[in-house]
Image 1: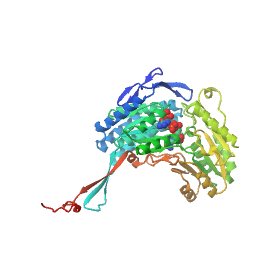
Image 2: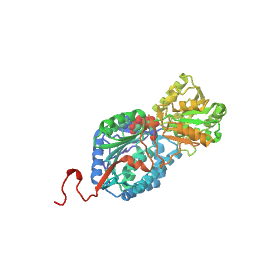
Image 3: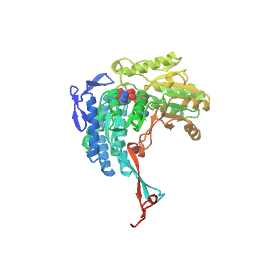
Image 4: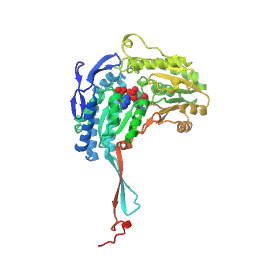
Length: 496
Ligand code: NDP
């Protein structure tokens, strides 16, 4: 791929230029253009959905035996692994994450395809207990065309989490990746094609979500939307889905509390809090952005945390040692800066960071340092709204009752972290926290075998887990009559 080329996109089994406007994606570490492509047009949305529908009906994919579909998914996993380094480097350029992180995301995408291949070939349909003269069964059917709408922060991993179970379930998929990070979704489509996925079963439509994502969601042939992104967009999609009576899964934002109890192992807690908020430069839905520390420990803990945060290596994402790359865009960095200014206006104090780094690579890309605010209350705006950047708000707490009230006082309820040596205490607290995921003495660890999702404004439904495939299937009950006689109600004489 050269910079001058306009990249084709994948629409209904053909690779061609999108019908929309030409635009460039940029490398956030330098602001330089990375790749040019034409966005998809509304006609392309129509072609992709119609093509997916036709492929669903006629390619035979939905009718293949589960182990046959699984074979293709295993191949996709294998091809992702073969090209792991190339994909990781591309993703680094696509969204500016440090290379160590993009390697992990690519590995996770391969693991996701492998996992759902296994889930597909081992999925059991059940014979339900008989309560009459019939055998009753519960089986699953594919839905048809699924739309997968994804954000910019973890391409390929987010796409895999939707595409793998949807394909495993026998469906066709149209991906709408984030406008600014379309490259990995396009590579994934190439890989799927090479692995033998029938043509037309997977399309990728780069471009504006407000136009293309909206049209996809409204399309009558789209039978399910799986969305990851902001809460406002998620609610918009949910409204459209309600009108269509269409199931959706929504993985949305977060403002997750991380709690350090007075008996915590401080080395573990410092490392975990740092990783929880500052990895991915805080551009993570599960970022542990509200820190609650037992008051007796607050000063010594904050001193250690601040000293360690100041040592984090911010810089070139291509450098293996870099821990924090740039933010995704100039506009997003400005939004983060506005939140920090707001925190100060609300009466907060900067314990660390708060100013753009300068000189060398910092003058080109959208870098922002680890930033810690304190002196604020949980009710204030910077504690309630998702910043999606490397900004931690630290607060002391006096007792567990007050702590639980504050930790749960959020529209969001995606994740939470607890640091304590007392497992019984941590267990009791963990059960009282309202969150889709609670990490105890660890943070931001993921397993594809463990369901993930949020409560309240953090979302609807769950991804991952062996039964994640069922989100993309309709359940059907079958009754097989076993009675020698006609149904009694009709009162027919038999043997006539
Ligand atoms: P957005 O909601 O703005 O965008 C997400 C996707 O939706 C993009 O592809 C976007 O396209 C598209 N989109 C935008 N408007 C519409 C619309 N009207 N109809 C359909 N699709 C639309 O989120 P961000 O890209 O800003 O991503 C950050 C957000 O994602 C954060 O809130 C974060 O917490 C959340 N997130 C949640 C995760 C989870 O698993 N819970 C994981 C990762 C992120 P376009 O690119 O053109 O805007």
